[in-house]
Image (cartoon, rainbow, N blue to C red):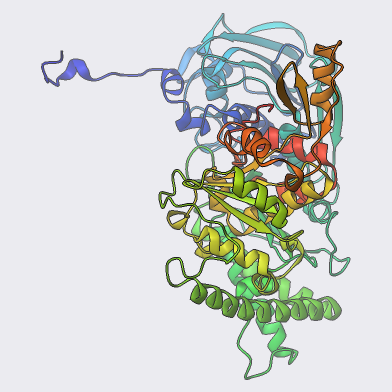
Length: 638
């Protein structure tokens, strides 16, 4: 047992790359899927920096057959000469084995770059089982390899001539499976990032190849329209208000901004910001400057055109941004990111630049595009009216549920427990399903809320219309935690909200509509892991004297393959209302904690993609998307 002393011997000094292996989360965010892919982003970002500096025209990213990843660029190549700091090592080895060593702290290497801390590629080295570096420079190919923990196998050596006198850097690495929860890269995740980088770097060619067995594919991205093409791509599945994509930019000595934007008939804004090619998912000063100037510019235009009367209030920012898709890309010499994962930009000077550019350039575009300007103002007017109506509807909903219990919907069959941690709310289709569920439930902890038919599609309805819908009002009151920005997770009455719909096409559609509602209007409920989807069985059959339940047609085929001599008939359980109450209880309700798919999105950025996929008609695509992107997927066959 410790004697409680604390002296110099208790102080541990971590040297070299050891701090990264001891605390990887400080450098890559997590050791889960996002952290694993962050290794690729760090290497690709270095190649992108070469492109921004004007020396790289092509980047190749390859997922190797043995689980590794290779990133190759045709830039200048990492310097290979001995470094003045340590003449016994080449500059390349120093960069790969020393934290805070790089070409982004000053000098003439890079004017603008995504790298800031000088830890990117050295972190990749530290967290890899093996890393191989090849540098084509000065007509020769130089190579060096590193083993677990970033230890050099030997010095940098010349291994031959550079093919066709090319220049550039190639990094191959294999993630350390003792560090990461998983070491299998997702091709789709990589493709989405690479496509985004191609959009942000006009004319840059990025090639992707997956060489893993049964995953083989190739893809080439190159966009001469840059972020204008990016906006068009994002709006492909939407209905733009007009064909034009507004595009403007402005430069100063040490920083520059480019913005592209277009409005759609959607009711949700989609603003994506970047700093030196790095996605700033938490925004920052550039987003703040854009939003403020956008609101001012559109209000000034509306007043000047007499589209807003003197007595009319100004539009709020959310009115103007309804249906907006915008890309804000800034480049600056000294980006001040918050943390190594670079999620938020803190440079105050860039806010002023974006504000000036938007106030001036957007105002000019609106004057030159009166038809489009009028459409933007008319959409903002409708959004303003809807916002006011929604506030009134929220106030009405709040008043209805002001008294505890008095505001509960009449068709809710509540449970007797008031402990949210053990309480479950089953959302079922119609009264017949509610009748079966009521008889099969545990009345102490399980509540039943029937909904009539398909609820309103909140993805295609304004908030005020949504809040007038009786089924949605019932959901809001039953859960009891409010809505949207006012949602309070601490007030949730049930820690399991379970969608229990039929195992048919209509049931699938109802599940999709409910999931969309929860994602859009009660997102903290989803992110906390409180939203579940229960899958009722589609078939039952007798095995001996025991009844066996089978989830779907695929499960039935597997069962038949395992029981080739089975000759008992299969009963198709068409809907919850047609199931015997004990069947419903035994197969779906009494084991709700194990037979549910927990929907808990891993990253908030997936929400828009999730909604568009969950709203689609392809059941297989929906199922695969949820399985691949849920943080905690538990779906056991019944």
